[in-house]
Length: 276
Image 1: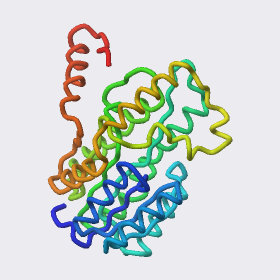
Image 2 (image 1 turned 180 degrees about the vertical axis):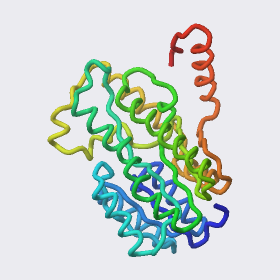
Image 3 (image 1 turned 180 degrees about the horizontal axis):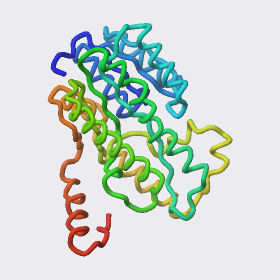
Image 4 (image 1 turned 60 degrees about the horizontal axis):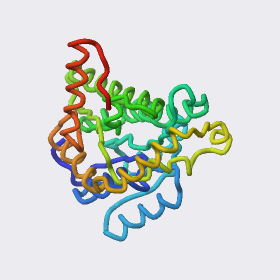
């Protein structure tokens, strides 16, 4: 998609972090925005920021783990703008725990948002984008979607699924000679609040979380790393560029791809796992 002026973009998880970075980049390119987030205060603040800067934007509180709410997001988009050209499935959460101590509630909450959210997004918005004859669907995975490290089992599984979802979609679109394009964002360390994502977790689900010493230590170390990570606004610009250039892979830290290559080499060589 080469022309962004006046086009309509929908971004989930847009109240902060990478989602807000995407919204700022798209708005700067002249696009009209539909921001979605489960956190009402952050969502309202993000919409207000864009409007004060002179951009067109609306906010729709959305729980992406519920198909009905994703469908309501699509309806609000069409009612307001009459079209949608770009979808960014970005909302995400994380729980740190060893696989053996990851509760069923942790599995269900993580997969519902991180994997089913993008599935619902693609299923709901793809026909609307196809009706425009041009457009792009992007989903936020992670380097954890390419490398399965310790203590993030549920997150790893979900993000591997997102990579597979978008790769499959891209191939389907290519086979059908569709003008629609797809991409997947695999961020490395970004300065976001992912380690505090349980702030928005329903109480009944949160009660099932199993706290572990290994998980707490990992979360503390990751929080420190992310606080020094890339600015989310830089990521937003990268995603915009990928859309304009019709590139599938969006890697914020390309050098980390060497770990993926090492894993493939190990698989071909002696079937061992690479320590990550």
